[in-house]
Length: 209
Image 1 (cartoon, rainbow, N blue to C red):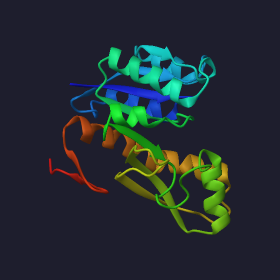
Image 2: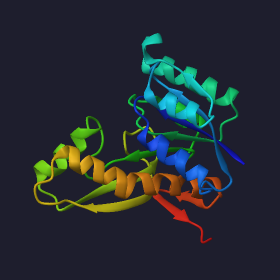
Image 3: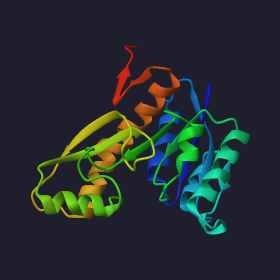
């Protein structure tokens, strides 16, 4: 059984999708063992508590740099015997020590079809504002492994979402979450825990069930 830690900074909607998937028995061979927040008082910690999942805080404000925070996170993850790290609305850049500690074992969900609208500065509503400003007809979400380049790791799963006439960034954000993020993130986590993913260069292969 793979022990999963979910790293959060805010409300935890993607965390809730994982909790719900676990309750339905969809996280095969995996269990959410910890939720770690970069901010005390984040609502995601309340979601964890309601589900009986231990919550921890490794607060960015307690450290002088992202590297110091990253090292503290690595220590906490090792202490908890974590096998998979999931970034779910985690709003800080992790330094190379995290990638070195968990190579191809950190998953992130991004609310666009990478390589579009990704990288530095593309987070939250900014992603959907950019997609609408560019006039694309299709957007979506991507789950990828994390490497040292923001949103640059090998892609595990993607799901497209159609943009509608008159969409606002807020409406699009909600639809991308409901139709894409909340579906492909639990799926990717389960595939990892089942040992069905392997990486060759930039390509993630998925073994047949």
